[in-house]
Structures are given as structure tokens and as C-alpha cells.
Length: 64
Image (cartoon, rainbow, N blue to C red):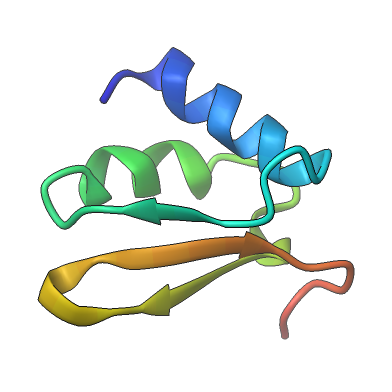
């Protein structure tokens, strides 16, 4: 998974074009590296699922 694709996914979550997006454990470190560099990083919520998958959503309010 490259940085451009990850940025597109994050932008689609922000704009609500995507409601949620599932990341596999193989792509998690690449995805997280790009995610934590985002200014609104705390508005992305990751929910752990089975087999190391993470379901990401964009929240209106940043988490604490």
C-alpha cells in the first residue's frame, strides 16, 4: 500500500465518501505511518477486528 493510496483513503473518509475502511494487518504499519502525520489524526477511529484487521472511521469530534 503506497502513500498516495493511503492519502486518498483518508481524504474519502474525511469527506464521508467512505463511511469506513478496513485495513489488514499486513498494511497496518504503512497506513498508520501516514495516518499519524495527519493534522486531524485524532478524528480517525480505529476499531480492532479479527485476524489483526482494523476498521477505520472518521469522527466529527476528536478523541481525547
